[in-house]
Image (cartoon, rainbow, N blue to C red; front, side, top):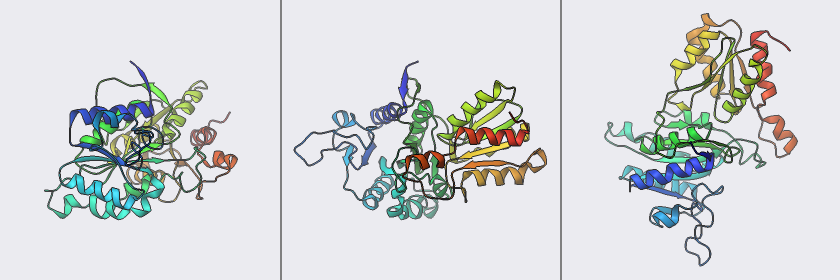
Length: 337
């Protein structure tokens, strides 16, 4: 199987779905680049090159550069979805949601319910999230927990290239609005990705490691950190189950509860701020539904409740680290060095 980067996997998913369905369009700031100008066409492909190369194959009617106005083009994408197209809009950084959130949570998320289930809104909003890119506090937040809070939205967090392609194809084929979170520190990550199109169903978690001593539930990029910690600790005889929920809405509560009950010791890893994030949500779920199965208090490993620092040294300290995950596992299992 060919190895492809996270960037290539998402790009391939977009291309294959645009070839399969003429209703799929891509829109956003510089998704091609050069619109209306005499200079180079297809110069950008979005800020990190994911959509580069789509313009020559599909043309300006399906690869649409927009003005720098998220409130306008996200609203246009929602309207296009409501009237028959299947747009994939590039919000660029999720930190910009503040200027277009009404179009998402108060319109796109509600249409199906407002119109008695007769309206569909098959829009995908791609957006970058996460720290580690030296992009400072206005370009580094997570915020997937905010979208997860809104009924009517689906939220995907691919943790590697294989997941990225399969989840993106599922997102495009879904009839509900999907917020597709891409971690900006993962675009060059490589992994095996099939050439053919495939979809990964939403709401079905992936158990990436199986063990008896602790369960680590991690989201997005943090899944890879958790896997590395599990592999390291296995050499000391500490075996961990690692759960990648893949989507936070819908959330695979069944797998989370089953794996938590199997070990009785749980660590939840979430790059988002600690108040009202996925770590607190999952911890509350386990406490409510499986408290009698717990053998130790749940440990949460999160970023601090502070904006992402611009200082490289401070940003590195801000991100949940493998050392912190390992320490949490040792704490719940009672197994020190």
